[in-house]
Length: 235
Image (cartoon, rainbow, N blue to C red; front, side, top):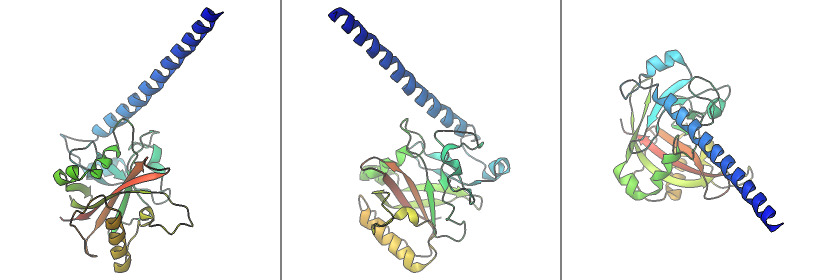
């Protein structure tokens, strides 16, 4: 009887191992396929936003952070904010989704462009954004680019910080609700709050006239955790 029990346990463990391996393999294949799809949008290592806009008018920009895998188009759909949460550039289903700008961020009007991207376990999408938790990484990557249809733009990092999604009744600072900053008071308050949360001091304090970009992704330090990097346009 003991031999039979051991055999059953061994077979069950083997089946579990095979199934787990298949799930993990499938996950990484899907992630690799999504990454390959994005790379196919580039031409000679770069991107042509005007040409891409003709293919899909939802594109509003392209974000790239050197030293990371973050090198993606940024989409926006005002009538369905999370449309690209699980869709690729071609509007086909994709677990990785596509980085997208909050519908409340209006190009040319909002002083903060709030951009979301998934934290994929295979290291793609906005997973590498968390590299900014380390001051040593920031020192070597103080800027990144967010190009738009109006031109190519460089942003300097203001703050990198952990946060979370709070309850609707919480009075905690909710950076993820600051997608359309249009007044000096709200701008100054935003900067004050993100710098208070910052993992380290960058020495950068933007003035109201300067455009901000906030990159946001999931983090797992707490339930519904988030990690964000705020930067200001310098050119």
